[in-house]
Every structure is written in C-alpha cells, then in structure tokens.
Image (cartoon, rainbow, N blue to C red; front, side, top):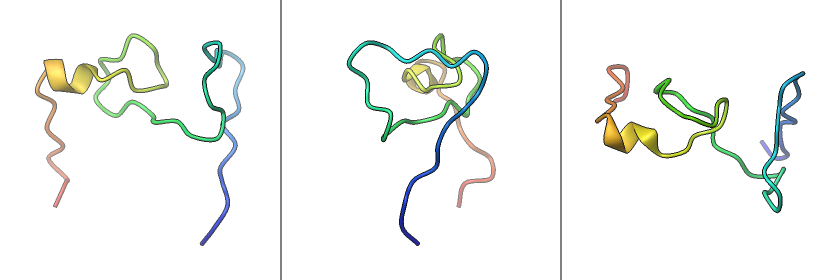
Length: 52
C-alpha cells in the first residue's frame, strides 16, 4: 500500500511551517493540540491496553 491520507475537517488548524504530509494523531486524549499528538502521552504515562 502506498500513498497518503488527507486529513480534513472544519476546525483543523495547522501550525506555520508544519507538514501537511506527515502528522501524528492523538490517541491518549490529553493533547493540547487535538487532533494532533503533542507528546502529552509521555507525561501522563499513557498505556494502550490493546497494544501487543
């Protein structure tokens, strides 16, 4: 599989200079920059109980 996935929505705000081709979405729910990950999962010790 190749190619990308376009992220679209009404309230998506991209930071100046950020890549629209590479992004990481928040899974822990603690990001201050939702829907994007800002690394808060490290501060809250987020553990995915479904990870193998």
